[in-house]
Image 1 (tube, rainbow, N blue to C red):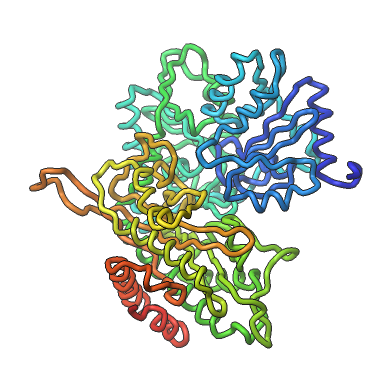
Image 2: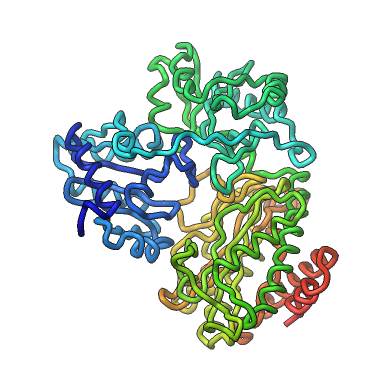
Length: 608
């Protein structure tokens, strides 16, 4: 292919020229920014710019002769299409092998070779992993070089959206109290200072929100806390005088965004700095003077914000009800319009987003809507575009029959939503019904779980997979992720997956987690049924020999389609759970709907 006309080949050629000038034998470009965010401001979307792959996760490695994009099974079909003809090869990463790119580099690099990775966006933990694997082989890790700065001529600037206050009553805990709790945790760690770089932690501690990252109400900044004061490093002009005064009254001073590393470098020799190695970049760690003692531990705010208060849980339930009412209005229109109007995957995104935007306290979507019909639904992170999308309906009839998967969510002042449903277009086949029922059984099976407080999230994963495993089926993504409170739709520390269990993944009361097993038949259809659940007390240790237990309260309020169910595969307790769930959905949403939306709600919540 002509390197003069293909943009990705041109960019790779420019990267290789820069590598030769320095010289380095390999370039690592992670999906990361200085805050180690999952969703990146445009300035730091360098992996996408250099490879052409638009998925949210992936690692690019460039050598003089090869370019490899490492991505897990959620993105394989998408990546193969987007990388075609680009000169970038997809490397399929098994779910349990996140260090696959390191093994690939270790096989190719020779003693004396240099690997370049920008330390400004390379996580400290990731850097340690690279060094442990490559240094014994005589390979040097060069982290002071930003190749993208040399070859990306129109690189976007830092985001400039204003920062605003998340106010009471939705912000139920004042930031003064959060800072006091944070300082108490610092004392337990023996730390005099604590540096926070992850944007959701920063937003939660300060009760501030922003719009620097699409779909996530966060802003770019850093926070350095000591026993008496806190310094918020943020670009000038993003915080107005009134808000700056309010922050000052609560003990938070403002400083320019670019001065964060300098503040770390200026720490006194007797300081003890608390850092989370998985939530800070190598460059910030390197800025800390050698005399300063560093304590590496989980950011205290990461666990604190995952445990929603009773007041927050009440607002989340309200947000779920509004979200459910919006979906009832959308689905009522959708089913009436099928075969009578032109409907594409893009239409679904537009109409569903519009219904949510009508709801009280709506702020934005919480991630790009995934509306995948038939084969498109088999790509877990599919996104319809004007250039490539499926048509479901025309004014004269259905364009095709099959299964439609819709994964969507929203940000409200009182909570973050994330829901996936699958709907039949026409008559589902016996195979589709069997697949759907097994996925539904997985959702129900996990939703009914009871478990001791402190159970590690990954230990629950098999409950959702068991009904699929019975038929020799499985899915490649995690079963559940934590969800923020008017914050990131993906948050830790807990998850439900096949990841290696770690102590910080322990389930505690107040955590919100998704339950989303799936099944994907490439080129045919995809099925995923997702609800959000809240950890609530089930049995108290008081009077119990075996300690405290938790159960899941299902928060999401939207009917689960029953036309795709194969009744013979559903167990009696699963049928009861579904009927009870639908009864609760009807009771909560009926007062918020009217007309066609209420009729649709009543029809779709009938007992089976």
